[in-house]
Amino acid sequence: MKALPYLGFDGRCAEAFRFYQRTFGGDLEIMTHGDSPIADEVPGEAHDRVLHARLTADEMVLMGSDAPPDWHGTPEGLSVSLQLSDVAEAERIFTTLAEDGAVEMPLGKTFWAERFGMVTDRFGIPW
Image 1 (cartoon, rainbow, N blue to C red):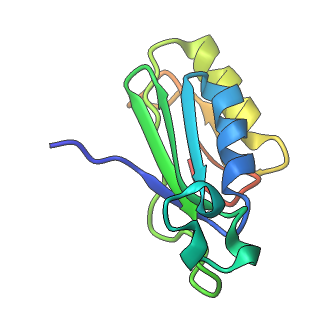
Image 2 (image 1 turned 180 degrees about the horizontal axis):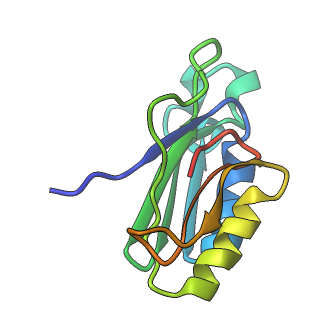
């Protein structure tokens, strides 16, 4: 069994996933409501909203979409955990995720990891 994070956004999913692709690398697929087989069933103002996004980078898979209007909420009680063996790469990714975001716990050495930190990125996703 594998658990994969599915991230919800309020109209910024495409922007967020392009940022994540620049941060992590990998292959990105984005389908908007307007590009989907159900485009004619979706109001025109929702055509640019993301129906499904998928970023695959090494062993990581992130998925997400833009939530329907009035459904989006702030993520609570969870965060996306990244495990990296390269300290320099961990520092680079943490710094990138922190740009225009909020550092909850600075990245540093702990008794359980060479580097551990907590950040909420500019899109409101906790890492």
